[in-house]
Length: 531
Image (tube, rainbow, N blue to C red; front, side, top):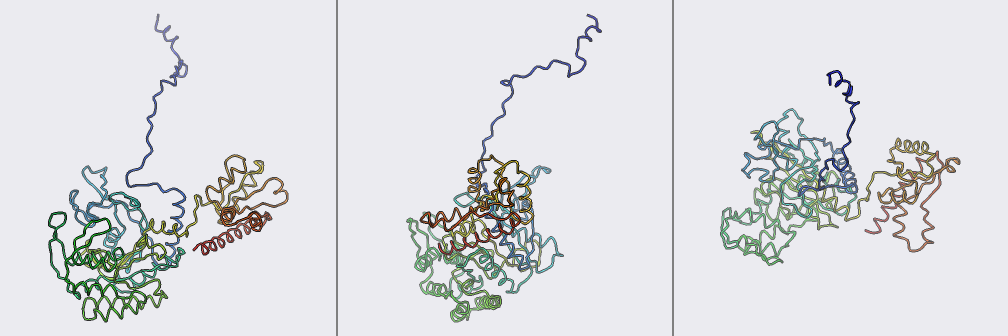
């Protein structure tokens, strides 16, 4: 066959060539990937995330009302910035709790993921000397720690901090305490207490009681352990909330066996020394002035304690001027925080109706941290909200509305031919700042209401051709329907609480706002009744 003949038999283009379809059975199968999470990490679904974001919004409003400005720093920092010198060294600020990340552009180079928001703040203050001082900042974001995961303990969690850097005045400490009080009030809490102490008073108490500044040995599990007497004394005092006065006396003396049968070795202090420390812990913590008077009477002769008492007196004067009541901020000598971190006043907030959650907001003065980056010491004070713990406590106290959607109004679709009317109402509501969605599923009305109930949407808008012709729409109070059905004992009582009203289309915005206001009022009434 000639070349020209062969050419005539060849397809002119690729498209002209007959295509052989690959049988479906011969197509390579995509491997299925198992959906899973890393150990110590979690997904936060809409119901919890909406509640958390709303809580954060209220906290942010309080912080900004006090003049704190936002600051964002990277999740990754150089290892030495985070307190590490090499990959094997577990000493330093972060210890062995730092997640390491490989630098893709520099083989063998590692960075660390931030384990708190304070070390990056210290780095920023040192790196940007032109920042105004005092520098008042708040920061919210995830932090990462290679801690052992457990119930309520994650390797990624949220921190929300506020700090004042560059002021040694006690007004700064008092302002942090005031912010803590106002934050908890803004979240709807009434029964709480911010407990304040001072590390200088704690150190003075050790001198006052005659706690020796020395190293000792104890037998633990058949082996000898060396411990610092003063440090172990403070650690024992820090257990007061769990063991009380009798337990503290045992821990400071010969040791204590707990409810599980485990034995904790004692510090081995003399009886007279223990009695003085117990007297220190018994300083009254109701009125701040009463606490100061008792402290002066007990330890006024100790120079270090006197310095700390004077600082608390300044904090008291500022808190009183700000109108912070003794019931919400008190001096409490049982508070021991940050043994190697804080340098002056320390504070932590507890919920009196949910003490099992422990401290939900804590902090103190840390004048030495910024000095890691420069020779000059820069004073600083701050506090951190325990975001996840506080949210769970608020849910426990029924102070959080459960919602799986931010939608306030669901526009049900009764007549698809009226689509443009539904969309126009949605746009109108959204322009008025009311979160609204038009149902995008099927026409079954019952399923539309079930969808709204599942997401916790408080209002359903119902309208068809007849309603539009009359210039009316119906608003169904889904929130009240859900709550009232739990409260009412009879159908007659239900009829006295109508949950659906027909309103003029022209008054749609006003009527929706009025219904939401009634819902919020009713919700507060139910909470007060349940409380």
